[in-house]
Each structure stands twice: as structure tokens, then as C-alpha cells.
Image (cartoon, rainbow, N blue to C red; front, side, top):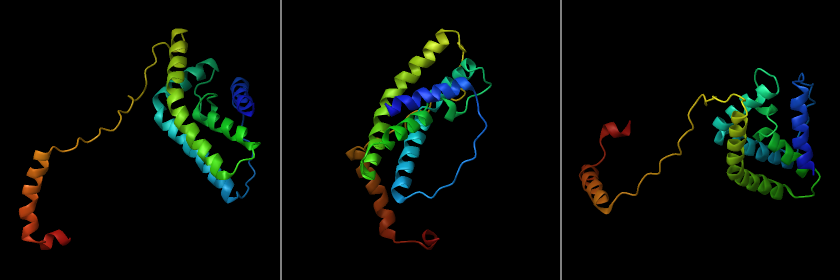
Length: 178
């Protein structure tokens, strides 16, 4: 219920428009609160990096809907910042140990990592089909996943060993020390 309420509040803030930043009171956090905050921030940063291209396009389209020039990442009611805040709000009333809370953030990060991609793609597609920046293209191409190095074949291992063996037999040289 708190999660849903937080997301609804994010949409209401979007509809009201930007508000000037309020003065924030600084408080010391307990170690447990700090650990939970860091877990939440890690989840938000991971999702933001992973879906940067989709989020950029979605934020531009939502900015048009909200009649704004631009939309900050924290103002996207379905972006990682709003999801992280909703998670914090939902856990605020739960009586859980810090380790369980952190585990929940990690689990949620993993599950959202697979769930939000199709959601963001569908929303972007629907908004584009509805005439909201229909020809919008990402400013940067999506990053390819890192290539996995292939295991060398036994023949390649034998060749590289044969080439390295004479060098090792010569002993260290002075220039190798510096």
C-alpha cells in the first residue's frame, strides 16, 4: 500500500509541476540507516545505468506531457528514483532487520532489472504511437554487453606456453624491474 501511494504521489508531483527545493534538515544516520540508504542508492544507480537510453527517451516524452522543457531523472514518476523512494516508503513501516532490508533491495534490484525493460519499452512505444515525439531517437546508442573472452583451445595454450617458456628460462632482466 505504501509503495503504491508513493508512486501515486510521484505522478501528482509531476502534475503539479516543479517546486523549488525545500530546505533540508541534516541528520546523522545510524549505521543501519546508512546501510539501507546505500542499498537503495545502489539499486537506483544500477537501474539508471542499465536503462539509461530507455529512460532518456521516456523522460523526454513525459516532459512533453507535463509541458516542461526537460524532466529531471528524479521527476520521472516511474523512473528508478521514484521506484527507490517507493521501496523506502514501503519498508519504513515494516519491522525487519537491516540485513533483511538490504537483501530485499538487492532482490528488488534483480527483479526490477528484468521487469522494467519491457515496461519502459512499451510505454515509450505507446507514447510514440500516440504522437508524443514519434520520431525520437536515443542520443547515444545502447551499450553492448561486454564480450566474454573465449576459453583458449588446448593447442593455443600449448603454443603460448611454448613461447613463454624460453623467456622465463632467461631470468629477469633489469628493465623488467622498472
